[in-house]
Length: 397
Image (tube, rainbow, N blue to C red; front, side):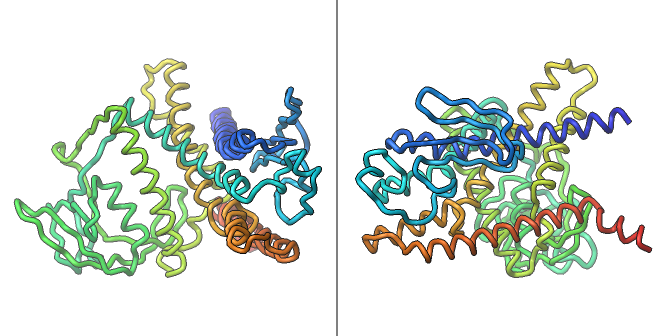
């Protein structure tokens, strides 16, 4: 009972730390660029809701922590609310006081873009540190088993093949292949495989199958129907110098963004189920799994400090992945997000005047409604993943 309680406590604590770190990075990007461009700032908040902590800095900015750690905001002086949406009359007083809405459009665009960029920069820095400190381990996609009636069984793949490319894109390791196939259900692919000393081109169409996720639920995704392993000569460890580590970090961020784009496409094609989406509860569950796993996987001889260091490294790496997701999502052209702001600023730059306040207000409401529907749907998926609804059905029956 005590162990279970500690696991929950570690999971919740890890969730708050990871999400707060990612939110801080995003909002600090807005804040830092706004300050450098002489935009007046009223408030910097991590979390929403009732105030747990607040302090007014010498420059007049109020730094606060809210009770609900599900986001944050930077409120600029003169804005009606923290959304910075809508047109307001640009007066001499507004210009004199350095209000955000009175700044040139390029200033507002840079401030809006700074949040997502900060998320990507944070991920690059984290990956660079990890690659410099530990390098990267790849296990070549060596096929040791082909499942009956699978896509692989219906193709020319053979046991002993090593997949080296998919549609001409290099597969450094088995994990690259898994990520590629995950979102490719129903698509025509050409695998380049190493067979003995020859390279063979193998056409294949991954099937859309039901597979168990790490959370224990069943979701639709693409699959070849192969098992990869396990020869010593197929495991390669790559060491990076600082320049190489930074370059590889840019590649890694690009790979993750590419997977997110492919995931959206796979959702619309029906190749993946929407249950792969995660809301706050799903993120909390992931943080708990990562945190407890980082501790449980340490040897019994490890000291408390070593376990703490491994926990911190695991959570920072998770924060880097989540930071990329937050940066990518905020660049989507949804009016309530940074991407929506950038769309309106682009239109304003072309027209020479802002989009009318009524159009902005309507689009903001639509964007907010879409975001709330996505939030509710993702939370519903989280609850379903936890088995809440199946439990209620069992009780009802």
